[in-house]
Each structure stands twice: as C-alpha cells, then as structure tokens.
Length: 94
Image (cartoon, rainbow, N blue to C red; front, side, top):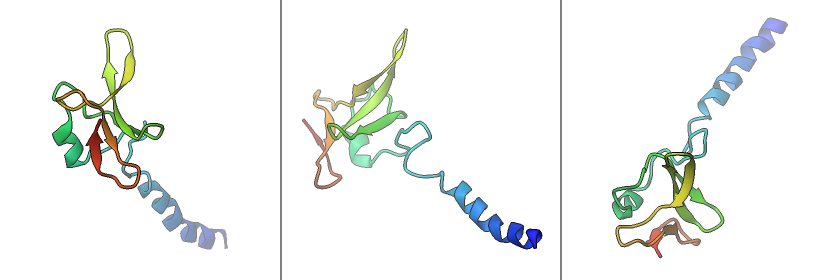
C-alpha cells in the first residue's frame, strides 16, 4: 500500500520542480526583459539584473559599485526613468 501511494506522489513532486521556472529568477530579477524596455534603456546599465518595483511601477537595475551593490532606476538614453503604466504593461519613460 505504501508503494502505491509513493508511485502516485511522484507526478506531484516532479510538477513542483518544474514550477520554479518562471518570469523571475530566485533572487527576484526578471529573466527576460520586454523588447521595448531593452530598446529604451541606456547602454551603460546592467540589464541582466532588473526588477519591476511595485511601489513606483518602474524598472530598477542592480549596480555593482566598488563597495556594495545598489538598486538604481533604469533610465532611458535621455535620462528618464523607465516605468510601466499601471493599467497595462506598456513601458513609458518619465
């Protein structure tokens, strides 16, 4: 009887393993930025570690300084912050 329940539980265990793959990394960074965001972003920023801040709906990236890492707003070439409109997911610059 134990073996029967063990066999039945295998698909559930395996499905839990595959659910870890999603739009965010384990650290909470976006795995793949939308093309619109990468097109707007200034070239000197690290686009591999970007988060969408829920407080201001803007993208922030991790800047590694000489002493510590700091989250900084993602900026366009013109210097405006790259944000998402609250009613949809279209990136805009401020």
